[in-house]
Image (tube, rainbow, N blue to C red; front, side):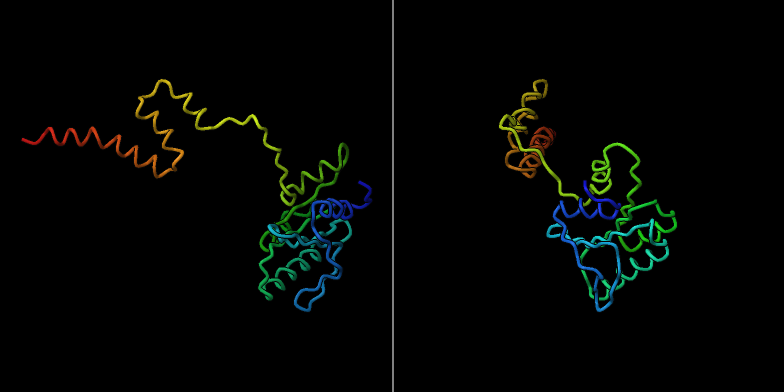
Amino acid sequence: MTASTPVDRVAEVLAGAGYRRVAMPLDIAGLKFDLPAAFVGASPSPDLIIVADTAFDQEQRILKKIEGIARAMDVVRSKRPLTAVLAGPRPSSAMLDSLSRVCRVLPIGTILDGDADAALRNWLAVLMPLNLPEPSTNIADPLTEIAGQLGGLDPEVAALVDFAQHGADAVQSRLHAIISEPLADEDSGDEP
């Protein structure tokens, strides 16, 4: 990372994850909000992410700005989720509680040593796109694997795995038939 302030580091990570930086001051419903940084995500994560610096702004001032943004978003009936990333020293519990009533809150701690990039990405993980590994070609058929483990079961019960390919309803119907057959035989045998 080449950024120098906590807000710059957060901004660099969010921009790298595909979030678009919004010009300041942020304008919602004709109201202007001056913040260190704001980002919007694209579908499927259209969050409005507000980045505040607790080292340079007072807690109450940050709280009032974010509550104002939340109210303005309500007025314009915005469907965007609001997230506040708080860079710098951890705010008080009372402030975090108040903020959590109007938005998702991600306090970013102070990075003392170690891999700063990894620590920051860990704190912002909920906002990052999920990177899945490429599937290997050696993936076995799960139903075949399960069928191989059912050696000690009654053959009729083990055969339920074959019905799983046709969905839960097929398995449920066959299980119902397996259970009902002995009961039907008992009922027909009791009649005089």
